[in-house]
Image 1 (tube, rainbow, N blue to C red):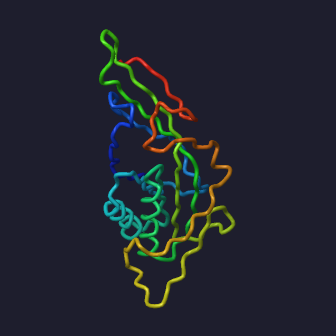
Image 2 (cartoon, helix red, strand yellow):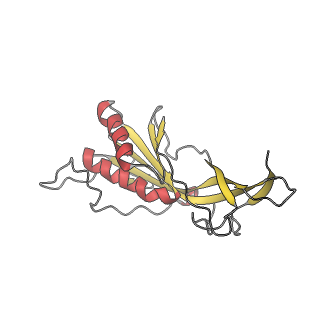
Length: 209
């Protein structure tokens, strides 16, 4: 089960003014957590997602429906927002065990030429991008403390209000990326870079059908 927010549409990069992004898809990959029970909710955080909407749904799952575990995931420019959602939930509920996994994910973008040469058929540009991705598991039940990325529940401070939803509290540093989860090196995969560049982005022209 997954929930996600809408993503904002950035303008075309420099040199791509005649192209319009018509589709973006994410490489499907299993969650990097073994032994997850069936039906665990995955909150897919997007760049344009509203934190209030995400947290309203996530808190309902944990408090009203009695879920024991929940996963927050995001990639690219949504990574920071993903971490913010996790910190808010940890302060609201307290006593949550955490496992963080960092890896890379492949995005597939399809750009359509809006101004093809006279007499030529419209062409699409397909771009593959590798972007950083983060998955964070929060659990009411104890988790294996020896696994990479584990963080124990944070001790409550005297006088601290556990219901505070402020996102400005001190955050724990993330563990380093797991070597086994980083199959590729990102080169120039920033969201503002031009799809015409080199690196490990693989682009090709295909006929418009």
